[in-house]
Image (tube, rainbow, N blue to C red):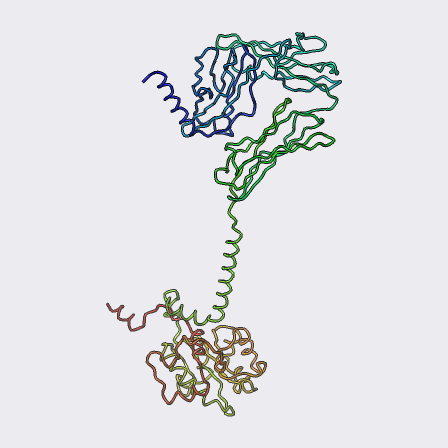
Length: 578
């Protein structure tokens, strides 16, 4: 295989590899020169808008896009130094596009820069391409040499200024500043307009070369200042993925109607139908000129996030730029938070409703399944769980039924089914013992007081006197020394006729009303169906008379002492004898 074939094969491989690089197209600025002068191409990809070049290792390679060959700097009159490609002795053959390729450990970027080599016009001392600048009349103003980039990296340089073909000397009209990179013109007048050429001689790599730029200067009465970037303002913008978005680049140029300012959006993406920039819109006002150029996103994708989108205003008075960066919007938590709060509110309201409806049922179920949470009543010095008391008057037509209920039905349920110990006056007292002594002594040994009454038994003067005569009972009702449960066996039409102590307690904690026929869900068995008990003829009458629902017995149990996790006396004695 011949040398030419090997060269073509290497060229194909190189081009194929470059196709994988992210292409930034052509650089906005062209580089102009004339034969036998220097030209400088700078790779603009090494900046923070493309990649984090300060923290990322990278290398730069230059290619002649016309030949596809790499420019190594070993060619005659060329030097590759840092991000710059120098042509120290330009010729027409050097004209063309040069591709700058920046490679990092995991990515690759490329951008083309155009070099134009033009012949100078015959008899003209300046250069064919001229940079416009303005001087303000009647003041001291300055012109900036466009060759400042050439001074960076050279070994030495010197600059001379010309107006037309005349070499300028420092004196009453001109002053050189900043190593002659700035020409200060004193007391500017209209005759100071014209073509100024800044020529630089420099040494690089031991080779002496020269380069020149010509400025087309106009003198104006208007105050033309550096452009001011209004938008963007180095901001972070949050938005949702997939949504359209647009951002304006807004620049104000004060004090002139004529300008040479160019706006361009620079970003780390290839132009596409999804992300593009509109033409520049220009509007004139009395104070100056407004320039606007919009960058549009048809839809924002993840690759657009956390990327700098930079707007640059190129001007002979200096470039200004600013940027914005897109960030994902925080998730909208208002709906889920609202749903959560609504759900919690509904649960709270439902809990309150269920508690108000099933407070008794819930408390009894909790006592049944979690007895270990309650203290045992053993050892508290009490012999009875409840003292049962009820008024008895000869004129009361329901006294026999009330007495039968208190003496037979109530202990059958509470003692027989649930194991409570009751003291019932007349059943448990010693015959001949004084009633006052029995009440006083027994109440001190009981944990609860069950007061049974009907509309006919207490809502009469005899009922009031009876309560007041029962000193222990009256003290328990008034002082609250013993927990009292009121069992209202028939409806009291006028509660104000009750004894005051009973009425106040009834208003404070309520009464277990046997006559209330509220309908409930039948999820609790009746007392007669528990523990294998069967109704007999002796209990049918009071139950039929009072028509006691299961709810009544649940409420009575609710007011009885809680039976904690205490072992029966028989089992405890057995354990003690071991």
